[in-house]
Length: 176
Image 1: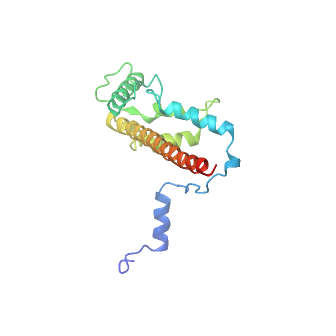
Image 2: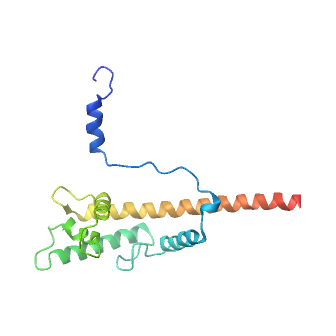
Image 3: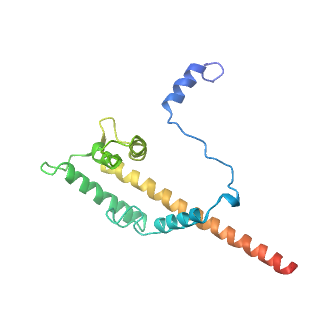
């Protein structure tokens, strides 16, 4: 409605169809009794994976810093480009999303729809399915940033937990 600045219901419906589906994260805090030792061990294992200098894989290359991650991403792109166009001139070519979509194949050779959608969300190929080196590197960089933000958040949370534990210990020993 131009007078009120709000959308009509059918316009809102069209807009919602264009926006990717998203579910609100669950805000319910897990009770202590629901956390198993197995879950804690899996979490600690995931943390060691994130803290690694090769968080994507050894095949991807070093990603200890943003600069090394970008260098490794460019090397991976060049390897993908060579694999895609082994007999052609590759200087003006781009990697096609079909090459990356091979990751989304399951054991039977069928495309796992959830993995394919996630790859599209991460890499955002153009309408023709092409992916430039800049877009590929930006996508990898965005994932790298998420890794590092998660790592920093966990470290900050751990510091707060340790400080709270120290306060509780002081109060406990003062009472005893």
